[in-house]
Length: 161
Image (cartoon, rainbow, N blue to C red; front, side):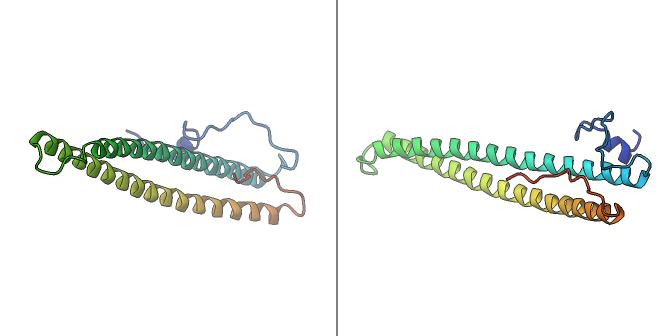
């Protein structure tokens, strides 16, 4: 299997880039360095937007999972409350049901803790990646501004709120 090159990654389905795009009026077609800086800036902008989308999707998925687990925990607690008026040892079937409900609640609470921990770890990873890409993006735009001799620089990335 051949090694994936940077160009293959650049053209992959991960980040759709329109190869037939036109450059903004502020980009000189006579200056290859300016076109390269613009392409890199556009690429980083797309990567940043993609990571922001992944953060949003993961947050939404985590909230949905958490809501489902809390709903199940609530249902088991309600069922447990319905048999709480029976004293332990009153009836073997009620005791088994109580133990089953308590085990289910414990398992669901453990799953909820694991989901929250996993989401926190994934969000931390996303934030680190995002910071790295934003730094690189800012560095490229600064370089572009320095090389543009006072011409306005096309700023592609607009952070989401």
